[in-house]
Length: 339
Ligand SMILES: [Mg+2]
Image (cartoon, rainbow, N blue to C red):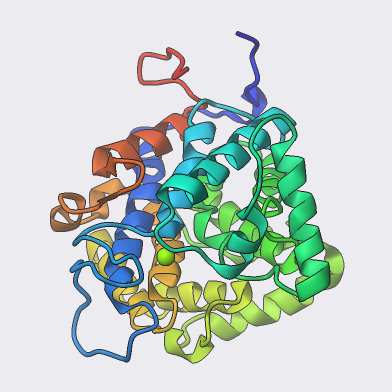
């Protein structure tokens, strides 16, 4: 088989970095499943629980469209594919189309408009992207949070190369969302995930130079506004900018003291994301991807790992495996290829 991987973007990972990579999809799925029961529901008191229901309706512990679509991206990323290549984007597009025909339990507006009636096969990615441009031009739909909600795994596809990470984030975002703000949000979040995995720190402003210069100061203002703020102050959060702000606010407003242990912050930030109300599962899935990248799979409480699951038949260990394979460029621990 030809080598389609982006080999220069791969870097060796120490055990701590590998744990952080392993946490990206898992913690996103946990956030998603925690938010499912409360999506567009009235405010509630106390800690959220993975009790299912929501728009699916979902089983207890089941994640929703956010992680379902992330799984479509992950299945391709886990082969070590260069996600900027047309064949890899076609493979993702084909999975999105299979998902909306077969597995989608609820779907966002922009995503539905673009995927409805789409045909798989060679050129499917270009057709989806063209459809997204048409949808944006004719209806204004194009900056929903549906691209940001699935971008976490993209942050793992080129851990040694921030420019390649940004290119992949843009390409995967543009399959369904044509407003440049959607791609910007995906670039910023994917780069933050890459940095969290490699360096073990939170930095959302660090990727500003990767987006177009004339939008950088606006994004800096949006991120500054959200840092340490109440996540509920960014409603409605179906817009990719307010969804990013709510997720970042949930993370930064719960950071607390340096004595706070990883699992405590991961959990309290996910709870804060769900309490942002409105699109609860999506905000918590977005936050979860970055929290997992920072604190690792080891910080995800066992009670959540044992319950989380969803289409296409994935559980916690599958979510970890897909993320680790992506971070390793498609090779398992023995160095053999996943495909
Ligand atoms: Mg959802």
